[in-house]
Image 1 (cartoon, rainbow, N blue to C red):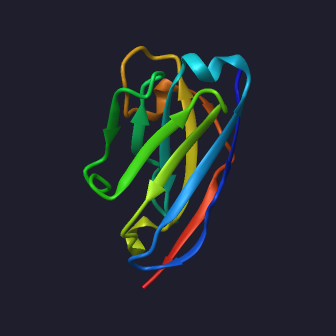
Image 2: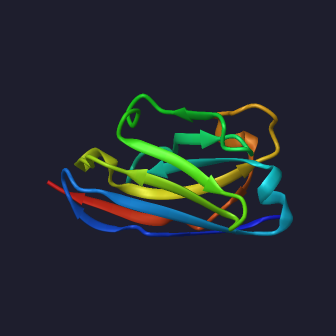
Image 3: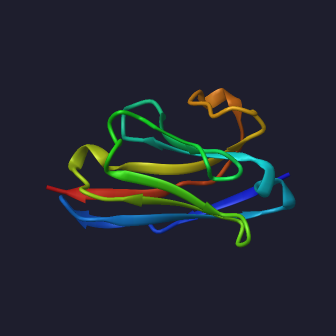
Length: 124
C-alpha cells in the first residue's frame, strides 16, 4: 500500500516556476514507478510525466517536455515535479500517482495509487 500527499501548488504568473512535492508513505514507493497527471476544468485528466523506480528513466508529455522535470528521492519517499516557464494552459489540479507497472506508462488506468491533488493556477 502507498499513500500519497501532494503539496507545492499555488498561484504563479506566466513565465514563473513552481515545484510540486509528493510525499509517500509505505515501503512500496521505493520500488514503484511514479507519475504526475493533471486535470484542468472541463477536461479529462492527462498524463504529464513518469519516472522509473530508480529515477534513471523519465517520460514526458510533449506539452511539458523541456519545461518540466520529474525527479525522486527514495531515501525521503518523495517525488518532485519542477515546473518552469509556466503558462495559462498549465493551470490544473496536479496529481501524483504510483504504478506497479514495470515499464513507464502514460495510461491512467495503469496507476494504482493516487494523491488528492494540488491546484496550480497560472495567471497570464
